[in-house]
Image (cartoon, rainbow, N blue to C red):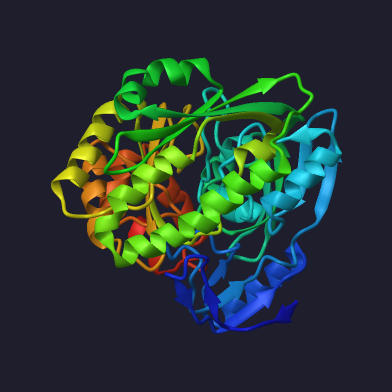
Length: 435
């Protein structure tokens, strides 16, 4: 276990901390030793991922554990679809391992740079009709508790800890390895198509029911939307040409998008025109490819984000109110608003716990002020019982959260039992858990 630089910053650049110690453990035993020594020195412990959370989830002034030493693929049971990998492995590397064994994750979010633990501890999801988010695909966890012991949990072993810790924000212990339920590798057919705002809202139920994975983006200040419908096909894959992939996913969606956001941040009056051009530039396309390559896309333009999960039946009304709030203000919003769907999940702190959910995500360029815009949309979504994404910016605290998470009190009681000294606490967990 080797020390490294004490300065840590997240991907967006809006969070940073200077821990007392930064360590890179290479085994669960080394994590246990780090936690034990931290307790002797009365220091808190947090494990970082790759910094793709916009909240202060990873920050600590105590001991920061880096993930780069915990990246091994431990076991593959292909007939049963069970795969165990260490917590610091990235989703990108994990997908390559799965593909080599003819396996895949049933559903994913839209980036794969996150570590396995970072993505799951903040309940990273995706969009799906039947296939739920990453936390619902976990079969077991290995984790180090506050007393330094290493434990495993699953539906059969310590089920209460399993349901709490799958989306535990690192507040119950340091996750060192994850066992996954995987499925046989599959090909997705991606159909991306521009559609007008009114048509999308009128057809929401139809589009959601007819597609395994449906989502859309709305470009504020316009009527333009980009719909995405992903469904399984037998194959073989028919991917985009190398040029079309570069044009759409690198040049337009990253290089040009980055330039237009820099222009928009300096000339807000140009945003409406830019959004109209962007909505038209990202035209229709259809292709088929290995599932993880359809689910994910490169994100090189840095931004800040807020996302809330609301009851699915509230989606159309919520979107109309979000649009009304934007239209009534003098803000110019350069990033599209993303809408995704998810079936009910059962980890206690999943944003989709116990209900069909719709997710509304808003973004701003990383250097832009976000507070006023995010607060205005947050008011709309919290009025509907919205649940904030744990890794994305929000202002909610325990008093609010206990009213929208049925098992919130159970989570707090478990935390009191296994981490009474708050070895894994930081300012963010103190705000959202109240202690």
